Length: 236
Image 1 (cartoon, rainbow, N blue to C red):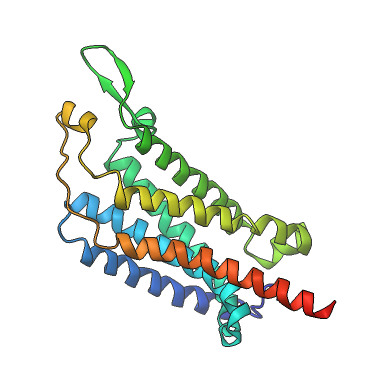
Image 2 (tube, rainbow, N blue to C red):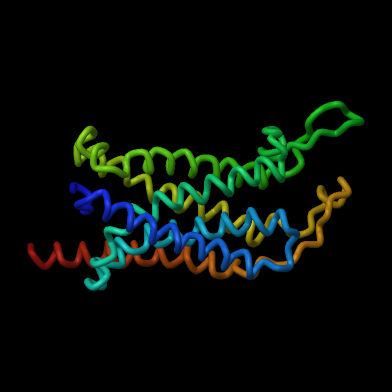
């Protein structure tokens, strides 16, 4: 009730709808990444779908301040946020299990060199981007675990609202993570060539969409803030 959903049935149906949308987004990202290998294509499909869900959750709030009819769908941010956490968790598992093979050193940009019998830092950008992803996932876990009326009642509405301001931290950290992989990581690098690793990857077909999602949230926040200041100044 505190978060605008009156019954368990309504909550279930809303999650069902967003879950179906999440599945459609996974399929969409999968279908447009046909040039990639099956394993990369799979984890990219879940990562991209998660980012689209996160964009909706963070865009619609400030956008509704500028365009009132959007207030009808603002309450769907909660379901979008929970499904972002679910889909991004699958993405993270696929990366850990299929790409870095649960090697945490490799996850943060180190590569084991057998001749030296040690890990050597080879991909600093890769490690930093993955740490960003883990940071976003940790905050998403906290917010998803408190996206229920009982959590609001336990924490108190003001504390709950303060905690959920970290949603923007999740978005901007996730955006940097996504943009790094979309524009930078798969470009040829001397370290990858020296290690004999593949370096000729196809372009990410959604890279400019991800850039647009990032910029649109940033812009709508500025516009909503500017409008709030303007309205406040008119009252003085």
